[in-house]
Image 1 (cartoon, rainbow, N blue to C red):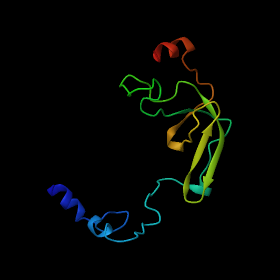
Image 2: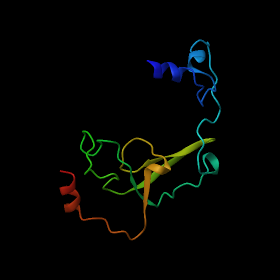
Image 3: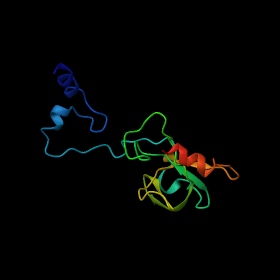
Image 4: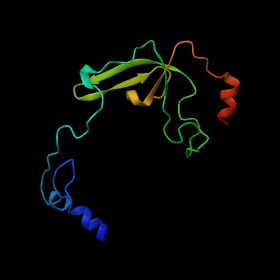
Length: 130
C-alpha cells in the first residue's frame, strides 16, 4: 500500500501531473508527442519496397495457438511481400502483407530477407512446427 501511495505522489511523464491530482480533474491533456522515435516517421519515413521479401515477428503463441515456448521460432517461417503501406503525419508507417495475417506491422516487426537467401526446406519447417 505504501508503494501505491508513493507512486500516486510522483508526476508522470505523459501528463506532468501527479495521478492523485489527475484523477480529480474533469479532463486531462497529455503531451502531444509522448513517444520519441529514434528514426524518421510519418511522411518523411523511407518505406520498405513492395518487391522486398519480409518475415514478420510472431505474437506470443501465434504459431501453435498456445503459450510461447523458448523453442518456438520468433520470426515467421514463410516470406511475404508488402501489399501496401499506410502513412500518417507523426505516426510510423503501418505495413500490410500479402498472404500474411490481417493485422498491420511496424518496420521493427518486419525482417527483410536479402535476395538469394535460401530458406530451410519445407520438410524441416513442417517438423519445426509440430
